[in-house]
Length: 362
View 1 (cartoon, rainbow, N blue to C red):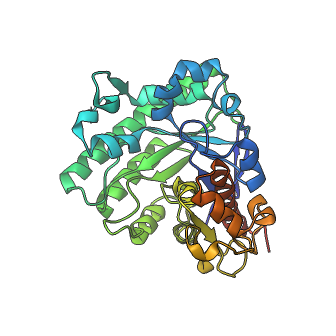
View 2: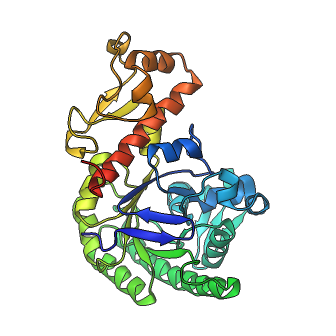
């Protein structure tokens, strides 16, 4: 069970468990900060690797940091860039390389190089004004061979120690008190090896962090949630430390991970599903009940004249004001407003799910 009911952060309280939608470049696609707040979203995730390129770190700072730039005044967690190394470099070496010093990126496979070291990763996240900082990690797939997993764990531990030292230097330099400092999370790697997961977790616990994340792609080759591995990794970390199931966002997967003791989740899946016409409903069950979860595929012609809301149990703006038939019409004709209304609904579904898990709703 979760060890804390909330995280107290520089930009407000984040109740646990919490789903954080991906605002990769400083925005959750198709909605603004007011929409997010109206949906009950309490925090978002932004990405250090992407932001250092677009709009660029100097621009983010010139615009007052991520909160001022985006108009979002709640908690922000910034990812480190480790997953981008996995998704780009490990899939295609022309996009860069991993070294013991850090990650070399070649954006768009061109000649320009970006070096992201553990120290720079922390410096950037402080400069952006993040509330939760993630250590740079060497992310792998669960099916990568054992030698690759061992190298990943060694680098992840080394990079985490360097991140911790730079974090402490930044806190001292900025003269931040206990309530003013952002939190720092380490990321547990090890692929499908319980032995390596235990080795990584033990080393990170010895270094000492405010929380920890499950590192690596959380699904197997068939797209199934790695339930046993996620539960085992959570068991390695004392309950008083919050754990982030990185990349987990399917409603049923979130519910499964909450049962295993995870408190934080992030994924672009709910918002991407919304834009592509895949809406979330409770299937006639109680609000926020993942066991009754159903997809509603709005592209289907059976919804052309359907006057019902997407989900009769939902209290979001979309369900309170618009019918399935109207939304089907907007979707089929590519109306921009469709993306906003659909995204609002899926985000509200996720917020209701987490509210239910926190006991905030009947």
